[in-house]
Image (cartoon, rainbow, N blue to C red; front, side):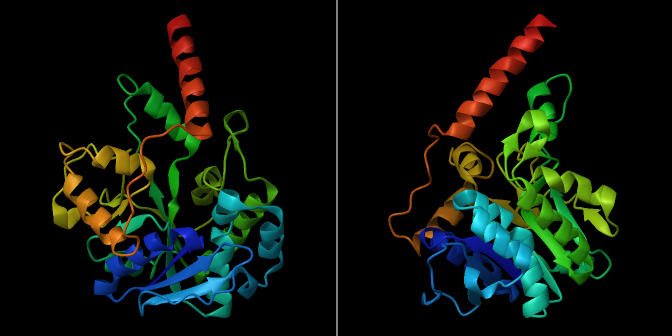
Length: 288
């Protein structure tokens, strides 16, 4: 089973934890190092990891993306190009892209079995959507996108869709709610409309996260968890029903970064912007 992710050198400890989590299932992890000055001569921590550098990718649109963006925008916009590179240069047949802060807890074999018939698998955010009690979350589905771009499963039948997605990323990598843009992610809403053989995963144990963890599941039902900062903050509470998974993940990451500590719920430009949008939304609710 072939997986891939994109990481800076400074965050390779997460990729190593991801590789460890798929190792029991004979998973191999391709890691694209997104540091522009990097030459991939890093000693891998696992035998199921293959490291790749930006210089390995020769496709024209991907090279334009590398030239145009940096930092997070570069990492996010490289996803379709990296998948295309794996199909074209390494002759990979089926592959799952996951963000490097994802961790597997059960066998993902059934996802690859789905790729025998489907070309693309997308994972919904499953944000709360109650129009009476969770209106702000309901509208978040429309602002941030129906699908989480931290997971994309594809086979070679998805090449046309991936090329389209890469062109979208090259066109604009921007968060602008009034324009319907949210980095690389909002474009995914159109993929089931424009392309064939696209399946929307309804398995709630796939891409479990802080924003969709209100459903109680058995341990064996949880396939993988997306430990982004919001999830880490939510699951860090000892009273949270999935706190045990949080503890497992932190201990795993600490093997590769001894001083690792989950990020605190600190302020960021995105959080400030989101809070301002919430205040505007709240004001509109009161006025109307």
